Amino acid sequence: MGWPIHRPRRLRDHRAIRELVRETQLTPLDLIYPIFVVSGQNQKRPIPSLPGQYHLSPDEAAKLAETFYGQGGRALLLFGLPDYKDMVGSSGADPDGPVPLAIKAIKAAVPPMVVITDVCLCEYTSHGHCGLIADQKVLNDPSLTHLAEQALTHVKAGADMVAPSDMMDGRVAAIRKVLDEAGFEDIPIMAYSVKYASAYYGPFRAAADSAPSFGDRRGYQMDPANRLEARYEVELDLAEGADIIMVKPAGPYLDIVREIRDRLDRPLAAYQVSGEMAMIKAAAAVGAVDFRAVALESLIGIKRAGADLILTYLAPEVLPWL
Image (cartoon, rainbow, N blue to C red; front, side):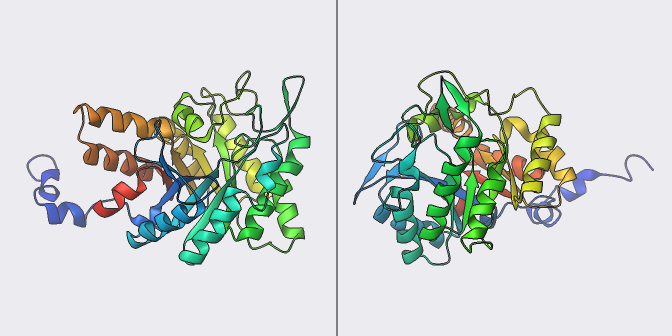
């Protein structure tokens, strides 16, 4: 019964055996690469807050898509930086904005690439909040129309999927209704269902120029201390028509990923956010950790916790290792 009959090391002694019995496998098909698109041509500007990432014009985004697809990548998530902003984020629904133009360029260059678009108002509003405001209060219901219009614009441009990240109540249902009425009932929605008001978003907000000009987002994003609320948010989004559920951030919330996975019979995504990536890069830059080993281990941890899909800025660096 006991030692030495049972020796777990027997299955660890040789690499080939370890790989044979490995419980969790990370593959290129698990990864979604978030990118940032801007207007213009021949624009590929490094993003200081996100080492290795760029602001890309549509033509450069198409080139990146070709390279990423050649590495085995199959899905991109697009964030847009508009030429103009206003109080209601109208540029988010501009058919000639950077996201619609990048969608068209990518799909023309790499038709099989899955193009997903982030749907939110924060990048497009002059105040930086994810919804309309009045008296410095974010308004829920009036924001839904603008979010749905943005989603429809992206889908008309050729997006394969939309991903609302705003955390307004009822936005999945509003987007689903508008898409269905326009004949796009087959377009799936990946909902940022469990999105915490996290301190890990800092590098992204600098990259997307989307930091709020007043207050914070704790009034609509989730309290990091809450667990049961995550289950409630998932139930609501599923009832409204979400096809894929997302947890964001990933690494600090692996317990939430696991809990949702144990209760969910739909695809589950987790977003390794900008702060998670930036910390790995910073530690590796000073020699504190081995970049490759820690990058892979962090992603394996997210997959082991139960995520089917992982959104990560590390995708192009990791793909050659898989």
